[in-house]
Amino acid sequence: MSKGKLFVISGASGVGKGTVLKAVMEKRKDLAFSVSATTRPPRPSEEEGVHYYFISEEQFEEMIRRDEFIEYDRHAKASYGTPLGQMEDKLTRGHVILDIEPKGAAIVHGKRPEAILIFIMPPSMEELERRLRGRGDTSEEQIAIRMERAKWEMDQRGWYDYVVVNDQLDVCVDEILNIIAREAD
Ligand code: 5GP
Image 1 (cartoon, protein in one colour):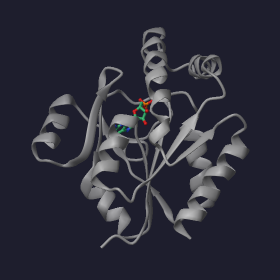
Image 2 (cartoon, protein in one colour):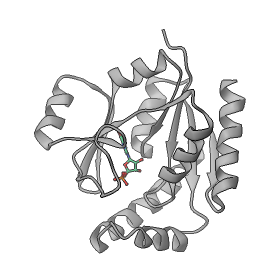
Image 3 (spheres, rainbow, N blue to C red):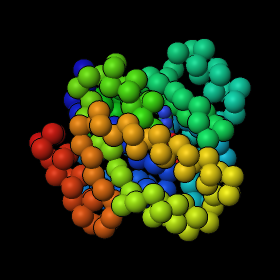
């Protein structure tokens, strides 16, 4: 039996989701992050089992074969998936938040209609590109791929329950905390 609510957060790479989520989770200790599996290499700041499970393509294929993902997708030249068992387990203990892109969010929405979907927007596409470049850990090729994908992602925001702009970090964090309080408390 699920005890907690399921939140799904999406937003283009570079929009600042990681920073927003960290601040939100510091304020809401009853919210657990669902750790995805990915085949992309870790960034210097990322930890195994905290930000992602970093696995090989073969391991990823094996997880698909064993039907271990609630959803998975291939984008930006890598595979990403949400392990179902871990998500269910965390939901028995409290609220859970998934950070996944719109294709995965649509699948979760189909399988779990009660999930609450939040889309984070950048103030502008120029600002998104500036943030991506400023991170200093993403190649020019990946920046181009991610900007192209960001345009498509922005078009998906219409079917999300909530759309929040990450212009000022503290305002964005407060808005998400308000949404969680409204939906979960
Ligand atoms: P990044 O490589 O910048 O960490 O993530 C790239 C994109 O993959 C982001 O939009 C992020 O939300 C998405 N993503 C991360 N984990 C998953 C997952 O398990 N499933 C899906 N569908 N997307 C994911």
